Length: 392
Figure 1 (cartoon, one colour):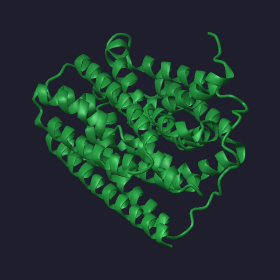
Figure 2: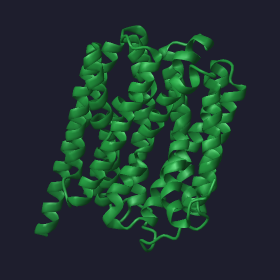
Figure 3: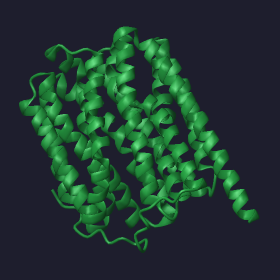
Figure 4: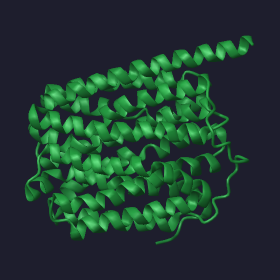
């Protein structure tokens, strides 16, 4: 394999690492139709395993941010990739029960905590400002890319040679990701911003946006963990469900890239765009709850493209809003992202296990609606603050 050039590595490295660190949990959800019966697990247990991954991420996030600041984004990315490789190989070789999955998901959570902020800092340091909206769209496309690969792995790997080989392949991808991270990325955006978010209107707006992303991600997180099992319950075969997840994930990637281009082309209203996309995602969740094949297919594309495609624009908006301290603001918002990803699967899995996927999807629609409402409120607050600043 020919190593990418140094210029290409600046683009490939954060993308490859970000995909590698989300694949363990994406594969766990997609492979649950195989792993669940083998380990005698239900949807609530799957939600608990997803919570283990995100809980480890949340707890490690403060230390992970300090590691990135002190060691540099490149070393932090490489560390995250190596931890992801360890987690993938551990699940493939050593996990034989619910308890056996837990320690490796903790390792995967540590990789996630280190890799997510490191990738954001890497992008901010190496991509010029006029292209950052699209760059954040690329970077945040890694979650649907992970579900795309996980969905493809169901018919091509899990149903042919076994689900453990998919996790083994994940470990190899993570090792490749570690290898392509450049030692010296060569930032182009000047000095590192002050790592402090001052009190005041901007801080309050960031906290409001953090609440919004918690609700929005709380709804969207079910797509990466439960979609295949929900589609099978709705009447699709495991192979068809895997292909449908892959198609939806492709739509999610495309939506993040298009939304990033739109964000680069406009100076304001980025948060309003996030709110509008969340409303479209809400409709997708409602259609998924209908459970008819046609409704599920349409709902899949709406949910993945709009209900999950807004994340890149959101973090771009955070950076633009907090120009004096984007690192600190992004860390606060990332905590909301992780919290939504932690609570969402637990709530969704519990509802699916005790009630039905119909109820769970409708609750996801409600969370998306709340998230959209908070985003619109945050946008209004930011506009008022900007108008007051102009008057002064």
